[in-house]
Image (tube, rainbow, N blue to C red):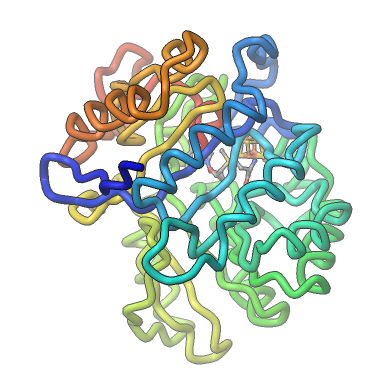
Length: 339
Ligand code: SAM
Ligand code: SF4
């Protein structure tokens, strides 16, 4: 069987795949979705079998880390069967195709029910999105989330022994007075924290330029109160980390807008409809669903994948634009491609 790796035209080998398993979500975060989202018809979404087949093909060709995301991955009814199947690729003998890590990004609203099962499938580390520890503010940001449910999910994850990273989208005038308390809370619960700049993806009914907050300034502010020691720690994602001396935990910064993190990017994203996106900041994508549903064999599918990866751009060109037709604005929602 052909197991050759997948290089792009800049020599970066593909080892990291993010898969969005649904565009649906039980929240409507102001930076991510519009209040009245129209979700895709079920027939558009890859079935479990289709997802498994594509992921297995990527793993055979060198993908070592798989992150499951959405939408909210845990609202998909058959998602645990998918985790069980993907978990079979963990812990394979050295030199053989297999996964080093299976993980997910979740809003934790349903994590209390799934944390133990996820651990049993081989998940060891998860990212949980949480933008505020204030119940009213949390409800306002997520439009329909409930902080205590999310905190229950986080507690269950800790009890199941899952390592946690809390993802917080930094928003001027929304949660920029909470970073100190989030750092302290993460210290208490033994989680890393990652601050994320807002990216202009998809219409949300809000003007993100109103609360766009460059993290370079946030970091300078944090350094007045906390001692940030740079660390080389990397997870294969775009975050750059420091260790906070006072808590012993890491803080990460994802700065797509102020810092170009593309040079070492080895990631591609598979959307829930089977489109392969080789860069979060570009519209270009390749449809894998049509050939898959037309009965193309694995070798033929990999020809499509290989061609897409060779078109992976060197870097993105995000810019916070003022208008919807700004060329630098990406029209798809993060929930379709997977954050
Ligand atoms: N529903 C899950 C969650 O919220 O963790 C997984 C999917 S969500 C799209 C993945 C991540 O993308 C979350 O951490 C979220 O905060 C982030 N995100 C969504 N839209 C974003 C945007 N416009 N800019 C920056 N981050 C965004
Ligand atoms: Fe849902 Fe996650 Fe988007 Fe919030 S960020 S609306 S939880 S997909």
